[in-house]
Image 1 (cartoon, rainbow, N blue to C red):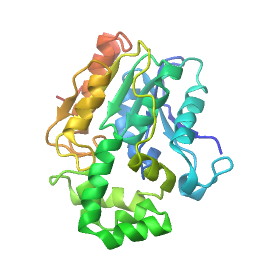
Image 2 (cartoon, rainbow, N blue to C red):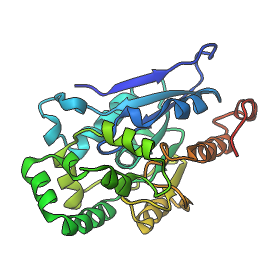
Image 3 (spheres, rainbow, N blue to C red):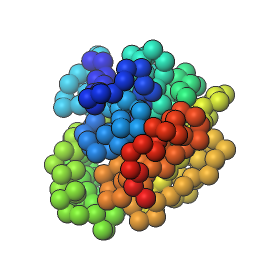
Length: 278
């Protein structure tokens, strides 16, 4: 099953404007890029496309079921999705989605790449082992059944992993209800030090943004990812892992937009023609 790309087109939007492709992370789907987030970029000259990785909702991925889909399978799906465009789009990846972009950056060579709270195997292991010591029975059951989704068993655990303490309850509830099952093999690979291409010979500009209240990725791990590309990670100190769903997501979107403007990928006029949240 090939990856699906959902495209949001606004009335009156001119054809041929710059595409931007959003790649979701573990347990998430294209739904994690909400309409206000997509519309923010669309109104500023970037046609928003959201990738749904293969295997969502139990669908098969080639010869494998979702349970045994590998990191390479997912990374190749990003390449396949990017190949649907005349030229590689601007890539924005969240969590595991950011890692998948890193793995194929040398093949894709996009005009720019944004890594939001990027997954790092070391940080994934740290978060997983720390929580498994608190709830060994739960993690053993998830391992025995090969179902990573089981470890997020309550609204509180969803908040602990993905949100800050200040996030409204309805935001957490909506996310918790939509979390889906994911690849057991990918989780094993992340725990067992996968061999991935972290930095290749590419001229792609990279922006790394982290969350100060991230329950998944340690700050040092995000900083380590940024250092691989010779840049400094920037943090939104009051936000949790799911930056695009948190209150104040506009600040994250504005930072991305202004960085793209600095690169000349968004015109000053289009970037400023709509009111930009402070």
